[in-house]
Length: 108
Image (cartoon, rainbow, N blue to C red):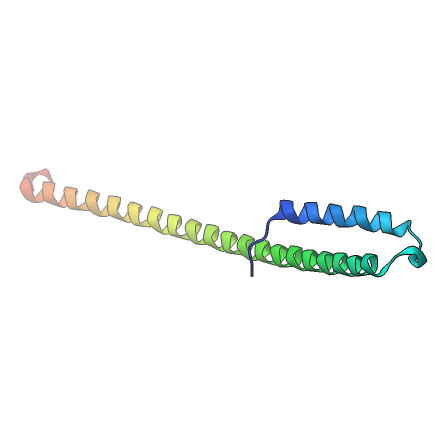
């Protein structure tokens, strides 16, 4: 997929729309071969822009899904970290208590 500049696409679409509107008011019988070829080129450009926009929308949805997946993974990891921290605090507390009892057997 190629990179896509939305501003350029919008500008090209506006120009194409303006040109198409102008051509719509010109009877086909008065159009020469160059105008017809220009119409065909404009239609091809519009089709290419519409395809690029569709590709960009697909890519945006993929990125949104990736971000959502990453956010869920972060939440899971944070929950695991919190459990590990709690476990470590309990273990440290138990170790300190055990050491205190060994150092002063009378304290039991």
